Image: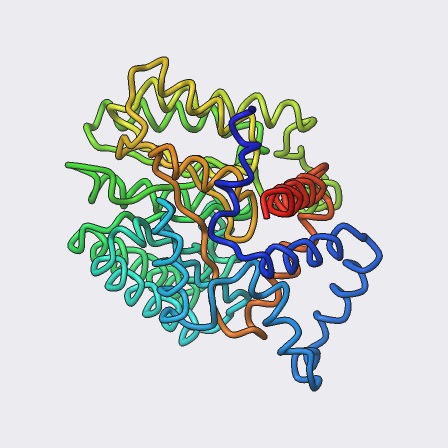
Length: 391
Protein backbone atom coordinates (compact mmCIF):
# COMPACT_ATOMS: atom_id res chain seq x y z
CA UNK A 1 0.00 0.00 0.00
CA UNK A 2 1.33 3.50 -0.82
CA UNK A 3 2.49 5.32 2.32
CA UNK A 4 -0.39 7.80 2.49
CA UNK A 5 -3.29 5.52 1.44
CA UNK A 6 -3.81 4.19 4.98
CA UNK A 7 -7.27 5.63 5.71
CA UNK A 8 -7.73 3.62 8.90
CA UNK A 9 -4.81 5.46 10.51
CA UNK A 10 -5.73 8.77 8.84
CA UNK A 11 -9.25 8.88 10.24
CA UNK A 12 -8.83 6.93 13.47
CA UNK A 13 -9.76 10.04 15.48
CA UNK A 14 -12.99 10.66 13.54
CA UNK A 15 -16.39 9.16 14.27
CA UNK A 16 -18.71 7.98 11.48
CA UNK A 17 -20.68 11.20 11.98
CA UNK A 18 -17.51 13.32 11.64
CA UNK A 19 -16.58 11.54 8.41
CA UNK A 20 -20.01 12.12 6.90
CA UNK A 21 -19.86 15.83 7.79
CA UNK A 22 -16.40 16.14 6.24
CA UNK A 23 -17.61 14.34 3.13
CA UNK A 24 -20.55 16.73 2.78
CA UNK A 25 -18.31 19.77 3.26
CA UNK A 26 -15.70 18.75 0.68
CA UNK A 27 -18.50 17.92 -1.76
CA UNK A 28 -19.72 21.49 -1.35
CA UNK A 29 -16.22 22.94 -1.76
CA UNK A 30 -15.69 20.83 -4.88
CA UNK A 31 -18.49 22.78 -6.56
CA UNK A 32 -16.90 26.02 -7.91
CA UNK A 33 -20.28 27.72 -8.22
CA UNK A 34 -21.24 27.11 -4.59
CA UNK A 35 -17.79 28.18 -3.41
CA UNK A 36 -18.01 31.40 -5.43
CA UNK A 37 -21.49 32.23 -4.13
CA UNK A 38 -20.45 31.49 -0.56
CA UNK A 39 -17.31 33.61 -0.91
CA UNK A 40 -19.30 36.62 -2.12
CA UNK A 41 -21.93 36.21 0.58
CA UNK A 42 -19.51 35.79 3.49
CA UNK A 43 -17.49 38.85 2.45
CA UNK A 44 -20.52 40.99 3.27
CA UNK A 45 -19.96 42.77 6.64
CA UNK A 46 -23.32 41.64 8.05
CA UNK A 47 -23.18 38.05 6.73
CA UNK A 48 -22.31 36.34 10.00
CA UNK A 49 -25.04 38.29 11.83
CA UNK A 50 -27.84 36.76 9.74
CA UNK A 51 -29.91 34.39 11.94
CA UNK A 52 -28.72 30.75 11.72
CA UNK A 53 -25.69 31.66 9.55
CA UNK A 54 -23.18 31.68 12.41
CA UNK A 55 -24.35 28.30 13.83
CA UNK A 56 -24.23 26.83 10.32
CA UNK A 57 -20.67 28.07 9.79
CA UNK A 58 -19.60 26.80 13.23
CA UNK A 59 -20.94 23.29 12.54
CA UNK A 60 -19.45 22.98 9.04
CA UNK A 61 -16.48 24.84 7.57
CA UNK A 62 -15.43 26.33 10.94
CA UNK A 63 -15.33 22.96 12.69
CA UNK A 64 -13.39 21.41 9.79
CA UNK A 65 -10.67 24.05 9.46
CA UNK A 66 -10.56 26.00 12.78
CA UNK A 67 -9.54 24.93 16.26
CA UNK A 68 -12.07 27.17 18.00
CA UNK A 69 -12.84 30.73 18.96
CA UNK A 70 -10.49 30.75 21.97
CA UNK A 71 -7.15 29.28 23.03
CA UNK A 72 -9.00 27.13 25.59
CA UNK A 73 -11.03 25.53 22.79
CA UNK A 74 -7.83 25.03 20.78
CA UNK A 75 -6.13 23.34 23.71
CA UNK A 76 -8.90 20.71 23.83
CA UNK A 77 -8.44 20.00 20.12
CA UNK A 78 -4.65 19.92 20.49
CA UNK A 79 -4.79 17.43 23.35
CA UNK A 80 -6.95 15.15 21.23
CA UNK A 81 -4.53 15.40 18.28
CA UNK A 82 -1.56 14.69 20.54
CA UNK A 83 -3.03 11.27 21.37
CA UNK A 84 -2.17 10.33 17.79
CA UNK A 85 1.34 11.80 17.77
CA UNK A 86 0.23 15.03 16.08
CA UNK A 87 1.21 18.42 17.51
CA UNK A 88 -0.54 21.75 16.94
CA UNK A 89 0.44 25.33 16.17
CA UNK A 90 -2.14 27.88 17.26
CA UNK A 91 -2.53 30.41 14.48
CA UNK A 92 -4.24 33.65 15.49
CA UNK A 93 -6.05 34.08 12.17
CA UNK A 94 -7.26 37.66 12.55
CA UNK A 95 -6.28 39.78 9.55
CA UNK A 96 -6.44 43.32 8.20
CA UNK A 97 -5.43 45.42 11.21
CA UNK A 98 -4.32 48.98 10.52
CA UNK A 99 -3.93 50.75 13.88
CA UNK A 100 -1.17 50.70 16.49
CA UNK A 101 -3.48 49.50 19.26
CA UNK A 102 -4.56 46.58 17.03
CA UNK A 103 -0.94 45.63 16.35
CA UNK A 104 -0.21 45.78 20.09
CA UNK A 105 -3.22 43.55 20.70
CA UNK A 106 -1.87 40.96 18.24
CA UNK A 107 1.55 41.14 19.89
CA UNK A 108 -0.02 40.55 23.31
CA UNK A 109 -1.93 37.57 21.92
CA UNK A 110 1.35 36.08 20.64
CA UNK A 111 2.93 36.60 24.08
CA UNK A 112 0.02 34.65 25.59
CA UNK A 113 0.54 31.85 23.04
CA UNK A 114 4.19 31.61 24.12
CA UNK A 115 3.06 31.08 27.73
CA UNK A 116 0.60 28.38 26.63
CA UNK A 117 3.24 26.63 24.49
CA UNK A 118 5.73 26.77 27.35
CA UNK A 119 3.23 25.01 29.63
CA UNK A 120 2.12 22.51 26.93
CA UNK A 121 5.25 21.71 24.87
CA UNK A 122 3.95 18.38 23.56
CA UNK A 123 0.74 19.89 22.23
CA UNK A 124 2.29 23.16 20.99
CA UNK A 125 5.89 22.80 19.72
CA UNK A 126 5.83 26.19 17.92
CA UNK A 127 4.32 29.67 18.05
CA UNK A 128 3.68 31.45 14.74
CA UNK A 129 2.96 35.04 13.75
CA UNK A 130 2.60 37.14 10.59
CA UNK A 131 4.85 40.20 10.14
CA UNK A 132 1.86 42.32 9.12
CA UNK A 133 0.18 41.36 12.37
CA UNK A 134 2.72 43.73 13.94
CA UNK A 135 2.54 46.62 11.46
CA UNK A 136 1.27 47.98 8.17
CA UNK A 137 2.36 46.30 4.95
CA UNK A 138 3.23 49.65 3.31
CA UNK A 139 5.85 50.28 6.00
CA UNK A 140 7.48 46.91 5.34
CA UNK A 141 7.53 47.78 1.65
CA UNK A 142 9.04 51.22 2.19
CA UNK A 143 11.78 49.90 4.44
CA UNK A 144 12.56 47.02 2.08
CA UNK A 145 12.84 49.38 -0.89
CA UNK A 146 14.69 52.04 1.16
CA UNK A 147 12.07 54.65 0.31
CA UNK A 148 11.88 57.91 2.29
CA UNK A 149 9.61 57.86 5.35
CA UNK A 150 7.98 60.55 7.44
CA UNK A 151 8.91 60.90 11.11
CA UNK A 152 5.60 59.28 12.02
CA UNK A 153 6.37 56.31 9.74
CA UNK A 154 9.83 55.96 11.27
CA UNK A 155 8.25 55.80 14.70
CA UNK A 156 5.76 53.18 13.51
CA UNK A 157 8.58 51.10 12.03
CA UNK A 158 10.46 51.24 15.33
CA UNK A 159 7.33 49.92 17.05
CA UNK A 160 7.25 47.02 14.56
CA UNK A 161 10.89 46.21 15.36
CA UNK A 162 10.16 46.43 19.09
CA UNK A 163 7.25 44.00 18.75
CA UNK A 164 9.46 41.52 16.87
CA UNK A 165 12.11 41.88 19.55
CA UNK A 166 9.67 41.42 22.43
CA UNK A 167 8.09 38.20 21.15
CA UNK A 168 11.38 36.64 19.98
CA UNK A 169 13.06 37.48 23.30
CA UNK A 170 10.19 35.89 25.21
CA UNK A 171 10.30 32.82 22.94
CA UNK A 172 14.02 32.52 23.67
CA UNK A 173 13.51 32.84 27.44
CA UNK A 174 10.58 30.39 27.43
CA UNK A 175 12.42 27.91 25.16
CA UNK A 176 9.61 28.09 22.59
CA UNK A 177 10.42 28.04 18.87
CA UNK A 178 9.01 31.02 16.96
CA UNK A 179 8.00 30.77 13.28
CA UNK A 180 7.47 33.91 11.23
CA UNK A 181 5.16 33.55 8.24
CA UNK A 182 6.06 34.86 4.77
CA UNK A 183 3.76 37.25 2.94
CA UNK A 184 3.70 39.24 -0.30
CA UNK A 185 7.04 39.64 -2.11
CA UNK A 186 6.92 43.44 -2.10
CA UNK A 187 7.12 43.53 1.69
CA UNK A 188 9.24 40.44 2.26
CA UNK A 189 12.77 41.90 2.05
CA UNK A 190 12.37 43.98 5.21
CA UNK A 191 10.66 41.08 7.02
CA UNK A 192 13.51 38.75 5.99
CA UNK A 193 16.05 41.22 7.34
CA UNK A 194 14.20 41.54 10.63
CA UNK A 195 13.92 37.77 11.05
CA UNK A 196 17.59 37.27 10.17
CA UNK A 197 18.48 39.88 12.80
CA UNK A 198 16.44 37.93 15.36
CA UNK A 199 18.09 34.66 14.29
CA UNK A 200 21.55 36.16 14.72
CA UNK A 201 20.61 37.34 18.21
CA UNK A 202 18.64 34.38 19.58
CA UNK A 203 19.86 31.37 17.59
CA UNK A 204 23.37 31.16 19.02
CA UNK A 205 22.80 27.82 20.73
CA UNK A 206 19.79 26.40 18.90
CA UNK A 207 17.14 27.50 16.41
CA UNK A 208 14.62 29.62 18.34
CA UNK A 209 13.49 31.88 15.47
CA UNK A 210 12.52 30.48 12.05
CA UNK A 211 11.67 32.24 8.81
CA UNK A 212 9.43 31.03 5.95
CA UNK A 213 10.34 30.35 2.32
CA UNK A 214 7.63 30.42 -0.36
CA UNK A 215 9.08 28.28 -3.13
CA UNK A 216 6.71 29.58 -5.81
CA UNK A 217 9.18 32.48 -5.87
CA UNK A 218 12.06 31.76 -8.24
CA UNK A 219 14.66 33.40 -5.95
CA UNK A 220 14.03 31.50 -2.72
CA UNK A 221 16.42 28.59 -3.26
CA UNK A 222 19.29 31.02 -3.78
CA UNK A 223 18.15 33.01 -0.73
CA UNK A 224 18.25 29.82 1.38
CA UNK A 225 21.79 29.01 0.25
CA UNK A 226 22.99 32.57 0.83
CA UNK A 227 21.57 32.72 4.36
CA UNK A 228 23.15 29.36 5.09
CA UNK A 229 26.57 30.68 4.04
CA UNK A 230 26.05 33.75 6.22
CA UNK A 231 25.02 31.66 9.23
CA UNK A 232 28.03 29.39 8.75
CA UNK A 233 30.39 32.35 8.60
CA UNK A 234 28.84 34.12 11.61
CA UNK A 235 28.12 30.94 13.60
CA UNK A 236 24.41 31.02 14.34
CA UNK A 237 21.61 28.55 13.66
CA UNK A 238 18.81 29.11 11.15
CA UNK A 239 15.43 27.53 10.56
CA UNK A 240 12.86 27.62 7.79
CA UNK A 241 9.28 26.67 7.26
CA UNK A 242 9.26 25.67 3.59
CA UNK A 243 5.96 26.07 1.73
CA UNK A 244 4.94 26.35 -1.89
CA UNK A 245 3.13 29.66 -1.31
CA UNK A 246 -0.20 31.41 -0.97
CA UNK A 247 -0.18 34.64 -2.98
CA UNK A 248 0.60 33.54 -6.54
CA UNK A 249 -2.35 35.07 -8.40
CA UNK A 250 -2.05 38.36 -6.49
CA UNK A 251 1.70 38.49 -7.19
CA UNK A 252 1.34 37.96 -10.95
CA UNK A 253 -1.48 40.50 -11.23
CA UNK A 254 0.47 43.18 -9.36
CA UNK A 255 3.63 42.60 -11.40
CA UNK A 256 1.62 43.01 -14.60
CA UNK A 257 -0.17 46.17 -13.45
CA UNK A 258 3.01 47.82 -12.15
CA UNK A 259 5.14 46.52 -15.03
CA UNK A 260 7.95 44.74 -13.19
CA UNK A 261 9.26 41.16 -13.63
CA UNK A 262 7.08 38.64 -11.86
CA UNK A 263 8.77 37.02 -8.86
CA UNK A 264 6.77 33.85 -9.47
CA UNK A 265 8.05 30.61 -10.98
CA UNK A 266 7.08 30.02 -14.63
CA UNK A 267 5.00 26.95 -13.76
CA UNK A 268 4.09 24.50 -11.00
CA UNK A 269 6.81 22.07 -12.08
CA UNK A 270 9.43 24.71 -11.31
CA UNK A 271 7.88 25.32 -7.89
CA UNK A 272 7.84 21.58 -7.15
CA UNK A 273 11.46 21.26 -8.28
CA UNK A 274 12.68 24.07 -6.02
CA UNK A 275 10.55 22.88 -3.10
CA UNK A 276 12.09 19.42 -3.20
CA UNK A 277 15.56 20.90 -3.76
CA UNK A 278 15.12 23.04 -0.63
CA UNK A 279 14.20 19.95 1.41
CA UNK A 280 17.30 18.15 0.14
CA UNK A 281 19.59 21.11 0.85
CA UNK A 282 18.29 21.55 4.40
CA UNK A 283 18.46 17.85 5.28
CA UNK A 284 22.03 17.70 3.99
CA UNK A 285 22.94 20.76 6.09
CA UNK A 286 20.89 19.93 9.18
CA UNK A 287 23.85 20.66 11.44
CA UNK A 288 23.04 24.34 10.82
CA UNK A 289 19.42 24.44 9.57
CA UNK A 290 16.14 23.29 11.12
CA UNK A 291 13.21 22.41 8.86
CA UNK A 292 9.44 22.62 9.04
CA UNK A 293 8.13 21.19 5.76
CA UNK A 294 4.66 22.67 5.34
CA UNK A 295 3.04 20.75 2.50
CA UNK A 296 -0.06 18.83 1.44
CA UNK A 297 1.92 17.25 -1.38
CA UNK A 298 2.25 13.51 -0.82
CA UNK A 299 5.32 13.20 -3.08
CA UNK A 300 7.26 15.88 -1.16
CA UNK A 301 6.23 14.42 2.20
CA UNK A 302 7.39 10.95 1.20
CA UNK A 303 10.56 12.39 -0.35
CA UNK A 304 11.46 13.96 3.00
CA UNK A 305 11.08 10.62 4.78
CA UNK A 306 13.46 9.09 2.20
CA UNK A 307 15.95 11.96 2.50
CA UNK A 308 16.02 11.43 6.25
CA UNK A 309 16.59 7.71 5.84
CA UNK A 310 19.29 8.21 3.19
CA UNK A 311 21.12 10.61 5.51
CA UNK A 312 20.86 8.33 8.54
CA UNK A 313 18.40 10.59 10.39
CA UNK A 314 15.94 8.99 12.81
CA UNK A 315 12.19 9.57 12.37
CA UNK A 316 11.79 11.78 15.44
CA UNK A 317 14.85 13.98 14.87
CA UNK A 318 14.12 17.26 16.64
CA UNK A 319 15.33 19.51 13.80
CA UNK A 320 12.94 18.15 11.15
CA UNK A 321 9.16 18.63 11.24
CA UNK A 322 6.32 18.02 8.83
CA UNK A 323 3.19 20.19 8.83
CA UNK A 324 -0.28 20.49 7.34
CA UNK A 325 -3.33 22.65 7.94
CA UNK A 326 -5.97 21.47 10.39
CA UNK A 327 -8.80 19.73 8.56
CA UNK A 328 -6.73 18.77 5.52
CA UNK A 329 -4.44 15.91 4.51
CA UNK A 330 -5.05 13.82 7.62
CA UNK A 331 -3.77 10.86 5.60
CA UNK A 332 -0.33 12.50 5.68
CA UNK A 333 -0.40 13.94 9.21
CA UNK A 334 -1.72 10.95 11.13
CA UNK A 335 0.35 8.43 9.20
CA UNK A 336 3.56 10.36 9.90
CA UNK A 337 2.59 10.73 13.56
CA UNK A 338 1.90 7.00 13.71
CA UNK A 339 5.39 6.31 12.33
CA UNK A 340 7.08 8.54 14.90
CA UNK A 341 7.91 11.55 12.72
CA UNK A 342 7.53 15.07 14.12
CA UNK A 343 4.29 16.47 12.75
CA UNK A 344 2.18 19.51 13.63
CA UNK A 345 -1.10 20.89 12.35
CA UNK A 346 -1.67 24.62 11.90
CA UNK A 347 -4.64 25.25 14.21
CA UNK A 348 -6.31 28.60 13.40
CA UNK A 349 -8.53 30.22 15.99
CA UNK A 350 -10.48 33.41 16.56
CA UNK A 351 -14.03 34.80 16.47
CA UNK A 352 -16.00 33.56 13.47
CA UNK A 353 -16.46 37.03 11.95
CA UNK A 354 -12.74 37.80 12.16
CA UNK A 355 -11.62 34.39 10.87
CA UNK A 356 -13.89 34.52 7.81
CA UNK A 357 -11.09 35.79 5.46
CA UNK A 358 -9.04 32.72 6.43
CA UNK A 359 -11.99 30.36 5.88
CA UNK A 360 -12.74 31.92 2.49
CA UNK A 361 -9.11 31.32 1.44
CA UNK A 362 -9.30 27.70 2.56
CA UNK A 363 -12.41 27.13 0.45
CA UNK A 364 -10.92 28.91 -2.58
CA UNK A 365 -7.60 27.04 -2.32
CA UNK A 366 -9.32 23.68 -2.05
CA UNK A 367 -11.30 24.53 -5.17
CA UNK A 368 -8.33 25.82 -7.17
CA UNK A 369 -5.60 23.34 -6.22
CA UNK A 370 -5.75 20.58 -8.80
CA UNK A 371 -6.85 17.31 -7.22
CA UNK A 372 -6.81 18.48 -3.57
CA UNK A 373 -10.52 18.28 -2.88
CA UNK A 374 -10.89 15.16 -5.01
CA UNK A 375 -8.15 13.47 -3.02
CA UNK A 376 -9.80 14.40 0.30
CA UNK A 377 -13.14 13.05 -0.93
CA UNK A 378 -11.72 9.79 -2.26
CA UNK A 379 -9.92 9.07 1.02
CA UNK A 380 -13.04 9.80 3.09
CA UNK A 381 -15.16 7.60 0.81
CA UNK A 382 -12.58 4.82 1.02
CA UNK A 383 -12.68 4.91 4.83
CA UNK A 384 -16.49 5.00 4.97
CA UNK A 385 -16.56 1.95 2.71
CA UNK A 386 -13.91 0.15 4.81
CA UNK A 387 -15.88 0.74 8.00
CA UNK A 388 -19.08 -0.56 6.46
CA UNK A 389 -17.33 -3.71 5.28
CA UNK A 390 -15.85 -4.31 8.74
CA UNK A 391 -19.06 -3.52 10.64
